Amino acid sequence: MITDPFFYVVAVPAVILYGLSKGGFGGVAILSMPLLSLAISPIHAAAIMLPVLMVQDVVTVWSYRKTWDWPTLKHLAPGALVGILAGYVFASYVSEPAVRLIVGVIAVGFCLDRWLRPPPAGGEQRPQDWTSGSILGALSGYTSFVIHVGGPPFNMYAMPRGLSRDVFVGTAAVFFAAVNLVKVTPFLALGALNPGNLATAAVLFPLAIVANMGGIWLVRRVPAHLFYRIIYGLTFVVGCVLLVGGVRAFL
Image (cartoon, rainbow, N blue to C red):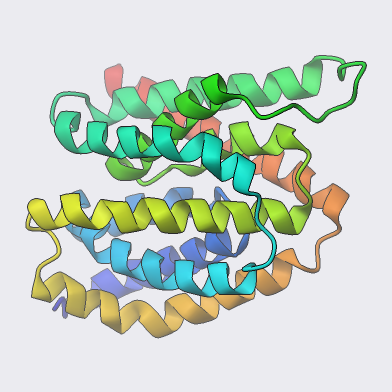
């Protein structure tokens, strides 16, 4: 178990950000892993946060247990499994900056297209699509495993489907709960889920639950029309952060 006070100085805001993200404001946790990496190695940070995220998943899934969209999950899940497997197999061959750059470009392009292009004549809602679902599901699973930022690809698929606020959040909750559960096996294979990391994660559980419930409380008080504007804005900001970080790493 980690006893270094500085770790907890950075872990507390990181867990709070994850709680807000799990509560429905997907994207605000973009700073969590960089914060934790100031105190410990990225692999240990990821291993400690995985059980924390799974505890938050339970809270969010229970809170939105009656509001989630099966067709959206069905189109994303197969690709996500492939993406997680690819992350485990190829993580050492593909650099994190390259992944950040790719996801950043896609996320920024998606938001700009949404804002600048006139809405289609038939309305904003797009039908479910196996091609984009498989691609974005795989990208979400891969980035969730490698850099713990799986939200933007998920948002890019789910936001145009015309889901209500609560159904969108509930669908995201179920999707990432499943993704995190699948990630346990690769992390065990890497030896990262050791007793010390699990004990450290357990210390953070109470804060994780409180932060998660706070995020859910806030989301349910945001008007539905404003919620989607916030999510698009967060997706754009996260994309810019990833894009800039990826570019700087290659300069």
